[in-house]
Length: 262
Length: 138
Image 1 (cartoon, rainbow over the protein chains, first blue to last red):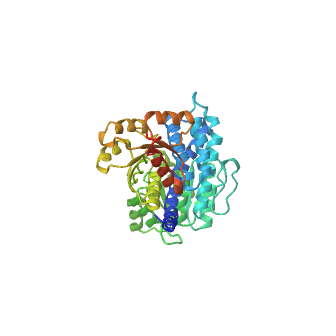
Image 2 (cartoon, chains in turn green, blue):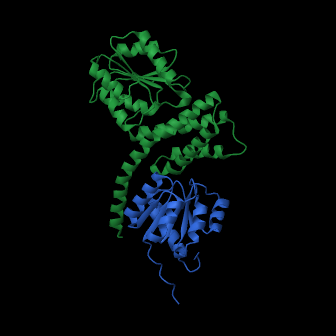
Image 3 (cartoon, each protein chain N blue to C red):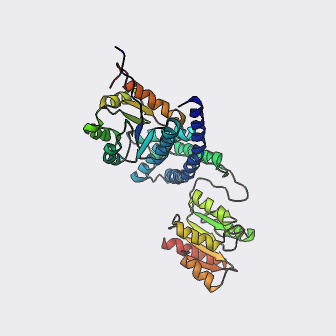
């Protein structure tokens, strides 16, 4: 192969690498979920051997791939975690936490470099994140995602569930999807009529088709009160349907009932 | 007497359970150097496909679920058709004692992970040439 042909081939590789890199970063969401669950387990000192192995597998994979995709910090931090998890005797769970946090930050930073998603503040120094979501500290409470374009409704949900959940908010379906992938909320309250290209009901049907959040409970809270809409929502997998104007106590009871059913 | 010319490397089999690795390796080896590449996501798959593909060289991950790299290498070495085909480990475990152990198992070389995509082809070609040097034949 001539030098010119080789240069052209390398340029072609660089171009195609961008697509692979994008896919790699999208898949980092799965790793972030594993890591975040690991941090939670460190907080509660309750990490099963299976979870430890899942984290080790995840760290090993990231260690072997991060630099190849241009994210050296992922490889470095994942290698440190992988090494510790392989050590014998077994390292106590509380010593894993800073390593998990560093890997989380490296993955989050990689994502922010490649997408328009903002980097999440590090676990060690999480701050408020502006208007679209409340500050996320290391998780202790379950997460409730409220998707609604009405600020008053979002504010009400924030107050209503503040004692039981970390409440995060989205103003349209696309943002809801991003936050669902990022934080894996324990329950989602979903409005139907929101700005953007997709309504809540269409979004629900999209989720049902994709199967990505098959087990994530979703409660519709919407002014779309036609019988056909209610049937459509429940057929698309909503665990409950509340019409606006709603009784706050009723919404709270429904959320508790849905979570109790599991 | 002059040394025999190094045969041309054409066909490479890549074995790794990680799709992200296989995709980058295939992209680089095919596009940069024009190799024909076959990817396998497990040792078992490699064993079933290796004879039909008849690779000149095999890149083999060390840590894989099911059959790991050394186990796969041992079974590949039992196949007469693969006699003399260099098998190169790709691994993140590259302490000198570990590399010695890989070579003792019969590996022709080691490519450290994570690897530089742009350098992968030249690393593979270097190992291929080392395998065919009169004094370095493995």
